[in-house]
Image (cartoon, rainbow, N blue to C red; front, side):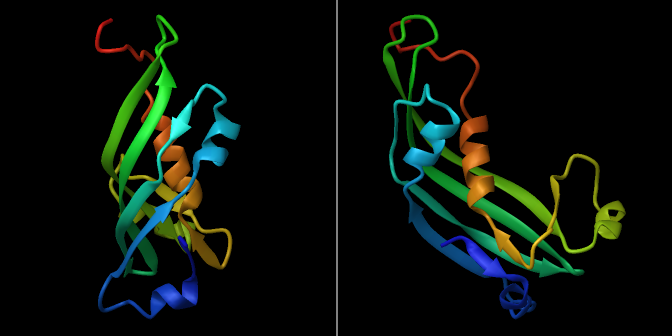
Length: 135
């Protein structure tokens, strides 16, 4: 799925590891936000690059979320198609080599699991105010 050991990823020090998969995260997202009415299967693709002991990740998400209008509570379909980037640090001492504003995540396990990041970014993509086209 979207989980690799650090040893697996380090084998890709010359070329980025490219991945592409489809995820069913509907139940997980609805558990975290009960207002979500529906979630299509999410197309996930991207690259993991091993650089200076850390992992630079770029992920593209494509799919659809259905949430209620904040005004009428009618269902609103929200197409999703965006990219996010994060840097996973194997040693937090490396943090000073990156620019302010870059998302730095410490790797606490001996593996990189991108599923939580995918779910987090989908939830963060939902605006505070959602309206139907008529509204």
